[in-house]
Length: 182
Image 1 (cartoon, rainbow, N blue to C red):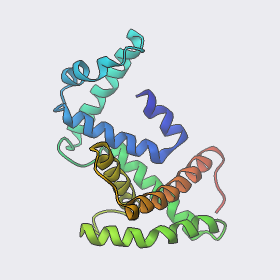
Image 2: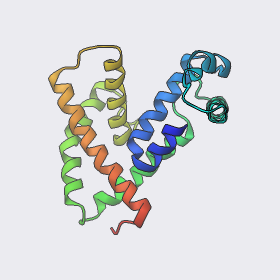
Image 3: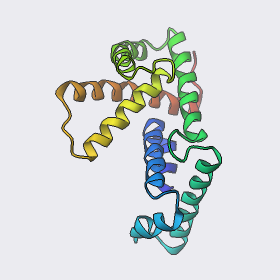
C-alpha cells in the first residue's frame, strides 16, 4: 500500500508492474487475507500496529476488488486497466503531436519488438501495444525471480522497452503536474 502510493505518484509504469505483482501475490494465497497476513504481511515488523492494520485493510480491499471484478484466477483489476487506458491515451496524444520527436524515436525503436512479441503470442488483437510492453517486462521479471537465465537479446529488448515506458511514464507525471501541450 505504501509502496503503491509512492509509485503511483512517481512512476506510473513501475506502479502498474507493482500492482500486477500484488494481484499475483493475492492469488498465490488463494485470496485469503488471513493466510496472506500470517505468511507474508506480518513479516513487515518495522510498521506500527496502525500501519499494519492499514496494510491488512488495503490487501483485503484488493481481494474484494478482484472478487467483484472476476479476476481471481487471471486478468487485471479495473484500476490496473485504467492505467493502461490512460497511458494509451497519452501515448496517442504524444504520437499525434509534432512536439515530442524523442518520444516518437523511442516508440519507433520499440515497435519492431512489439510486433515480434505480438506475433509470438498470437494475440495481437487482444492487447494494446503498451500492454504487450508491460507483459514483456513483467514476464522477464518473473523469469529472473525464478532464477532463469535471460538471453542477451532479451536483455537488450528489456532495456529498449524499459526506456520507452520510462519516457512515457515521465510524460505522464509531467502531464499530471502541469498539463503537456500537444
